[in-house]
Image (cartoon, rainbow, N blue to C red; front, side, top):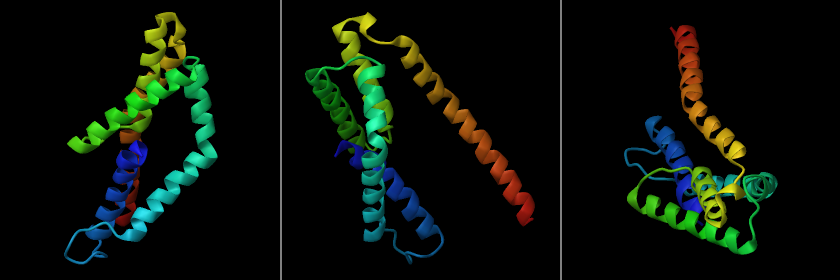
Amino acid sequence: MGHGANDAQKTMGIIAVLLFSQGYLGSEFYVPFWVILSAQTAMGLGTLFGGWRIVKTMGSKITRLTPMQGFCAETGGAITLFLATNLGVPVSTTHTITGAIIGVGAARRVSAVRWGIARGILVAWVITIPASALVAALFYKLSSSLAG
């Protein structure tokens, strides 16, 4: 529920803004019901078909989680997501749960966390922002040169 309350809302917002900006929603902004259903379906299918790999990585490669630790990590992550959602802060569910899992592992003992894997995830997150900006800039330049 925390996942859908935050990540699915961002997806729905982007789709609705695109529809509104192109005049498909008329003069009043709203999120069409079919957009809500599409986002829920996409998120559900993604979790169904790809979620097990994420769970395996998060629950065994960063640190070995017991059921109680998994519950604590999920609860901490969900509370963080609910707070962020209520404050209107768009946060990443993946970042939130990864931080919670690292926190639970480190609470057991600092050496329980595989810090090399955690560092690799952090580096990937940091690189993603400028890499996305670069790709977007390249596509903008390409599309504006083709259009103009």
